[in-house]
Image 1: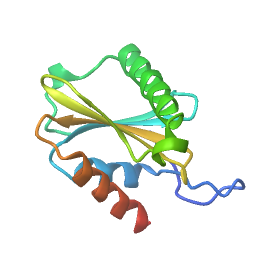
Image 2 (image 1 turned 180 degrees about the horizontal axis):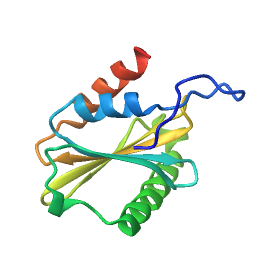
Image 3 (image 1 turned 120 degrees about the vertical axis):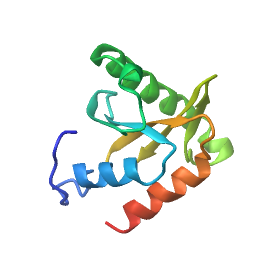
Image 4 (image 1 turned 90 degrees about the horizontal axis):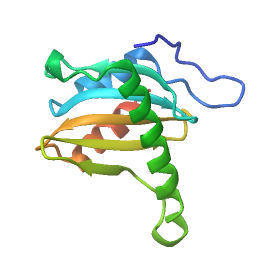
Length: 135
Protein backbone atom coordinates (compact mmCIF):
# COMPACT_ATOMS: atom_id res chain seq x y z
CA UNK A 1 0.00 0.00 0.00
CA UNK A 2 1.12 3.53 -0.56
CA UNK A 3 2.45 5.07 2.60
CA UNK A 4 0.86 8.25 3.95
CA UNK A 5 1.42 10.21 7.11
CA UNK A 6 -1.69 10.55 9.18
CA UNK A 7 -2.15 14.24 9.81
CA UNK A 8 -4.64 16.95 9.18
CA UNK A 9 -3.79 18.82 5.96
CA UNK A 10 -4.83 22.38 5.13
CA UNK A 11 -8.31 21.37 3.89
CA UNK A 12 -9.03 19.74 7.28
CA UNK A 13 -9.37 16.34 5.60
CA UNK A 14 -7.56 13.46 7.27
CA UNK A 15 -5.19 11.17 5.38
CA UNK A 16 -5.88 7.44 5.51
CA UNK A 17 -2.50 6.04 6.49
CA UNK A 18 -1.11 2.68 5.51
CA UNK A 19 -1.36 1.67 9.18
CA UNK A 20 -5.11 2.44 9.28
CA UNK A 21 -5.71 0.65 5.97
CA UNK A 22 -3.86 -2.40 7.32
CA UNK A 23 -5.89 -2.28 10.54
CA UNK A 24 -9.07 -2.30 8.45
CA UNK A 25 -7.81 -5.19 6.31
CA UNK A 26 -6.93 -7.19 9.43
CA UNK A 27 -10.08 -6.30 11.40
CA UNK A 28 -12.26 -9.09 10.03
CA UNK A 29 -11.35 -12.45 8.48
CA UNK A 30 -13.99 -11.93 5.80
CA UNK A 31 -12.07 -8.96 4.30
CA UNK A 32 -9.98 -10.34 1.45
CA UNK A 33 -8.73 -7.11 -0.13
CA UNK A 34 -9.09 -3.37 0.13
CA UNK A 35 -8.85 -0.56 -2.41
CA UNK A 36 -8.45 3.04 -1.29
CA UNK A 37 -10.07 5.27 -3.91
CA UNK A 38 -9.55 8.96 -4.58
CA UNK A 39 -12.63 11.05 -5.35
CA UNK A 40 -11.91 10.71 -9.09
CA UNK A 41 -11.98 6.91 -8.84
CA UNK A 42 -8.24 6.37 -9.10
CA UNK A 43 -6.90 3.65 -6.82
CA UNK A 44 -4.36 5.18 -4.45
CA UNK A 45 -3.50 1.95 -2.65
CA UNK A 46 -4.28 -1.75 -2.60
CA UNK A 47 -4.13 -4.14 0.32
CA UNK A 48 -4.59 -7.89 0.13
CA UNK A 49 -5.15 -10.36 2.92
CA UNK A 50 -3.12 -13.55 3.09
CA UNK A 51 -6.55 -15.24 2.95
CA UNK A 52 -6.91 -14.18 -0.72
CA UNK A 53 -5.32 -16.73 -3.02
CA UNK A 54 -2.70 -15.23 -5.35
CA UNK A 55 -4.55 -16.64 -8.34
CA UNK A 56 -7.53 -14.49 -7.31
CA UNK A 57 -5.56 -11.21 -7.47
CA UNK A 58 -6.87 -8.75 -10.05
CA UNK A 59 -4.36 -7.27 -12.48
CA UNK A 60 -3.57 -3.54 -12.29
CA UNK A 61 -5.86 -2.59 -15.18
CA UNK A 62 -8.80 -4.45 -13.60
CA UNK A 63 -8.07 -2.86 -10.22
CA UNK A 64 -8.23 0.62 -11.79
CA UNK A 65 -11.49 -0.23 -13.59
CA UNK A 66 -13.01 -1.53 -10.36
CA UNK A 67 -12.03 1.72 -8.65
CA UNK A 68 -13.80 3.74 -11.33
CA UNK A 69 -16.92 1.55 -11.18
CA UNK A 70 -17.05 1.74 -7.36
CA UNK A 71 -16.82 5.54 -7.50
CA UNK A 72 -19.61 5.75 -10.09
CA UNK A 73 -21.82 3.44 -8.00
CA UNK A 74 -21.32 5.58 -4.88
CA UNK A 75 -22.11 8.69 -6.91
CA UNK A 76 -25.30 7.12 -8.21
CA UNK A 77 -26.32 6.08 -4.69
CA UNK A 78 -25.96 9.69 -3.55
CA UNK A 79 -28.82 10.71 -5.85
CA UNK A 80 -31.22 8.80 -3.59
CA UNK A 81 -29.97 10.46 -0.40
CA UNK A 82 -32.60 13.24 -0.32
CA UNK A 83 -35.27 10.55 -0.19
CA UNK A 84 -33.52 7.75 1.74
CA UNK A 85 -30.87 9.46 3.87
CA UNK A 86 -27.09 9.32 3.61
CA UNK A 87 -25.42 6.35 1.97
CA UNK A 88 -23.72 4.14 4.56
CA UNK A 89 -22.37 1.63 2.05
CA UNK A 90 -23.27 -0.15 -1.17
CA UNK A 91 -23.02 -3.93 -1.36
CA UNK A 92 -22.58 -6.10 -4.44
CA UNK A 93 -23.25 -9.79 -3.95
CA UNK A 94 -21.70 -12.19 -6.43
CA UNK A 95 -21.75 -15.96 -6.65
CA UNK A 96 -18.40 -16.40 -4.88
CA UNK A 97 -17.77 -13.15 -2.99
CA UNK A 98 -19.17 -9.76 -1.99
CA UNK A 99 -17.96 -6.22 -2.59
CA UNK A 100 -18.65 -3.46 -0.07
CA UNK A 101 -18.09 0.14 -1.16
CA UNK A 102 -18.21 2.99 1.32
CA UNK A 103 -17.30 6.64 1.34
CA UNK A 104 -15.07 8.10 4.06
CA UNK A 105 -15.85 11.83 3.75
CA UNK A 106 -13.53 12.84 6.60
CA UNK A 107 -10.66 11.36 4.58
CA UNK A 108 -11.94 12.40 1.12
CA UNK A 109 -11.59 8.79 -0.06
CA UNK A 110 -13.74 5.74 -0.55
CA UNK A 111 -13.03 2.12 0.25
CA UNK A 112 -13.86 -0.88 -1.85
CA UNK A 113 -13.59 -4.12 0.10
CA UNK A 114 -13.63 -7.59 -1.38
CA UNK A 115 -15.32 -9.87 1.14
CA UNK A 116 -15.97 -13.55 1.53
CA UNK A 117 -19.48 -14.65 0.57
CA UNK A 118 -20.47 -15.16 4.22
CA UNK A 119 -19.42 -11.68 5.37
CA UNK A 120 -21.77 -9.43 7.32
CA UNK A 121 -21.60 -5.99 5.72
CA UNK A 122 -22.92 -4.25 8.83
CA UNK A 123 -20.35 -5.98 11.03
CA UNK A 124 -17.50 -5.01 8.69
CA UNK A 125 -18.77 -1.42 8.50
CA UNK A 126 -18.99 -1.23 12.31
CA UNK A 127 -15.41 -2.48 12.69
CA UNK A 128 -14.18 0.11 10.19
CA UNK A 129 -16.07 2.85 12.03
CA UNK A 130 -14.45 1.83 15.33
CA UNK A 131 -10.98 1.82 13.78
CA UNK A 132 -11.50 5.29 12.29
CA UNK A 133 -12.99 6.66 15.52
CA UNK A 134 -9.93 5.54 17.46
CA UNK A 135 -7.53 7.50 15.20
